[in-house]
Amino acid sequence: MRTPLMTDQELLKQYLAGNETAFERLVARHKDKVYTSIYMMVKDAYLAEDIFQETYIKVIDTLRSGKYNDEGKFIQWVMRIAYNLCIDYFRKVKRGPGIVTSEGDDIFKYMKFDEVPHDVHLDVMKGENKLKDLIEMLPEEQKEVVMLRHYFDFSFKEIAEYTNVSINTSLGRMRYALINLRKLIEKHNVDVSRINIG
Image (cartoon, rainbow, N blue to C red):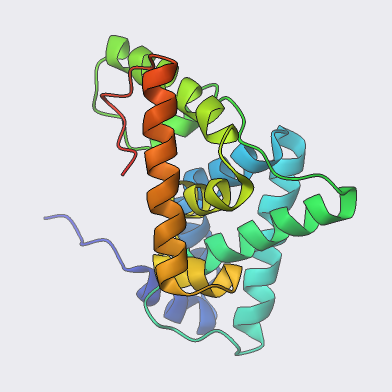
């Protein structure tokens, strides 16, 4: 009989009680999602690895200082740290974040396409690449909402807090982003039938 997987919260408790292996399991569990999201923003594998490591250094520092509030949202908290570090990097080099064309398998692990046949993988990859190009054409505020929601799994409440606007404003920006994306999809005749764009 298989042992049930421990939740993030159970692993966190074990780590805080001195079990270093529990934290390694947490990092391994979420590595694909966190690393891929960073990579899609910075477009550089070495830089993505640096920010990934910096993210978990901040996580460890916060956990050890007792400042982490366990609300059952560990991965959302980690993703917020990663996003903030990406934004800090762009501020330092004075250029805005973009969305890179994905290559390799990591993006599929993140997007949960592991169970589909190879030819469908190729269709999805082509659609994802074209969709990212279209997202780049959106106004900055709309693009930011799409990135936070689709790539970083922020809730609309978290998007509102992060961007200092009301939830209604963040929802409105997403609505306009989707309207504009659909127009761009039609205009450029892009097949996104296998991709969930909301």
